[in-house]
Amino acid sequence: MKKTAIVIPIYNRLEITKSGLLNIHLALLNVKENTEFSFDIIIVDDGSDDGSAEWIQENYPTVKIFKGDGNLWWTGSVDLGARVAVNELNYDYVLLWNDDTICNANYFEELIKILNQSFYNNKILVSKVLWQDDVNRLFNFGCYFDPKNGKKILNGSNDFDSEKYNKILKVDWSGGMGTLIPKEILKAIDFFDPKNFPQYHGDSDMFLRAKKNGFDTYAIPTLKVYNNRDTSGIKKIRSFKDLKNYFTSNRSNYNFIQNVFFCKRHTVGAGAWINFYKYYLKAFLISLK
Image 1 (tube, one colour):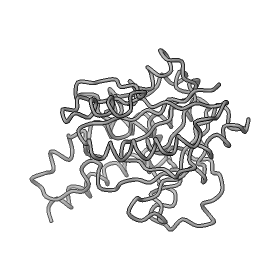
Image 2 (cartoon, one colour; image 1 turned 135 degrees about the vertical axis):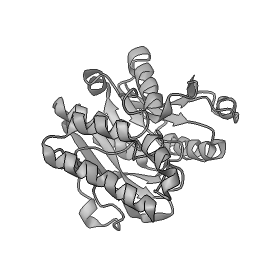
Image 3 (tube, rainbow, N blue to C red; image 1 turned 90 degrees about the vertical axis):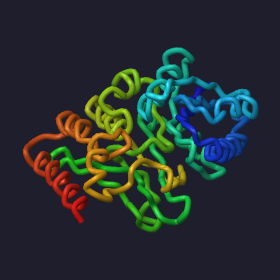
Image 4 (cartoon, one colour; image 1 turned 30 degrees about the vertical axis):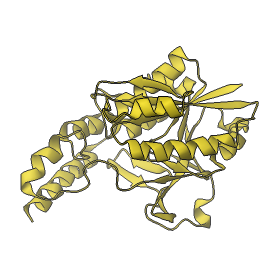
């Protein structure tokens, strides 16, 4: 039997965690009797003080919980969960998940159908991600990256889900919602890089390092998950007063040092650096308005 560890990082949002765990628990009931694949949940609680771990242990006693000290962030949390799952507990796959992620009831049945196709052995599989508050509109159906200009492109971003998004696509990367990674790939790339990318880029960096090592990623249209647009990070530049925080916070996609390191690792040529500085000039000008 092939074993999958569903790794979910949490931090101080118990009500959201409750809803997310209920959703995934109900979906897993549909594959409970499957004899080829099994699924277990691993929670990485990065120092919550709202009783999250205690509530989970009481209500879902089979869930494995590992704790951090509040300094893991997203990448450190999934890295810890993935390393424990693969190196210590001998799982065959790691499925990245978020506590605010919602999936269709048949999600795991569809995943098993794909895993039974030999072509997808040793491939990363990513889900079609839609919005929870607009379930027929895409957040993305896989993403692309151009190393020459450094641009990340979210395929289908905010487009209506339609027939053109119902074919399996080879893509470059995706996020941490409904991403299945075989243990062989995680071992080959030495898992995630929380030192350089504690929050943002932790996902895309993993995908791009896997691609450089010869591993492919496919977006699967029948694997549908739904993202909560209200529960992530710093969303936009508001004022010059806040600019320092935007350029230094781990919660900000404008974190300067992390973006420099990402550009050094994954881009080629001057075009990417020109776009890099345009990106920060635009942020600065927005802050002056």
